[in-house]
Every structure is written in structure tokens, then in C-alpha cells.
View 1: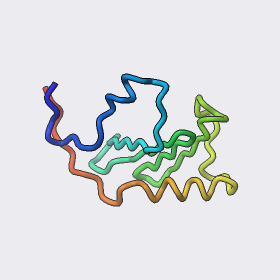
View 2: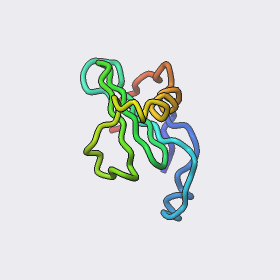
View 3: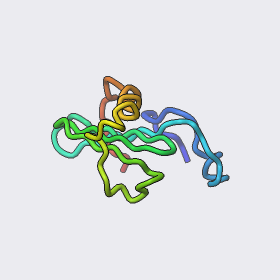
View 4: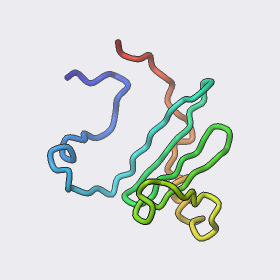
Length: 101
């Protein structure tokens, strides 16, 4: 399958070939609900942090709460974890590209 020009980064094939493999890399997802500014979610092996354009935040401990029922974003005991994940969100998102038809 040809790789679209807007795609970059490392291949996920090793993880797809061995689902039990682990990685210390983070996963970044950017999405637009309304308007043109994206919201971002960043995850490591244990935590997921989500920052919305309107400033709302979510933080989940995926080990203790795999279904993401308890938002820890305002819990002071998770402040260091949240700050570490926040630093990894790119300060400027790439421009949106048209969907491939």
C-alpha cells in the first residue's frame, strides 16, 4: 500500500507482527471536532492525557482504570505525570490534509 505524503514516523509493522511487543514510544492522536484547531491525546504504556481546544483536560491511568472511567486531570497526585505528557504534545500541529478518497 503506498504511504500518503502526509504520513511520517516509524513503521508499526513490528508491533502488528508481534502484539506482545512493548515500546517506550508515545502515541499521539490529533483530531478536530469543530472549527480548525485540533485537540490532542498522548499516551504511553500506562497513561493517556487528552487536551481539548477549549482547555478541558482528561488524564487516565490505564493500568488502574483500563476503561477510562476516572479522569485524574485535576488530581494533584498526578500533576507530575500530566506535566510530562503535556510537554510531549507538539506546540504547533501540522496542517490538515484532505481525506483520501
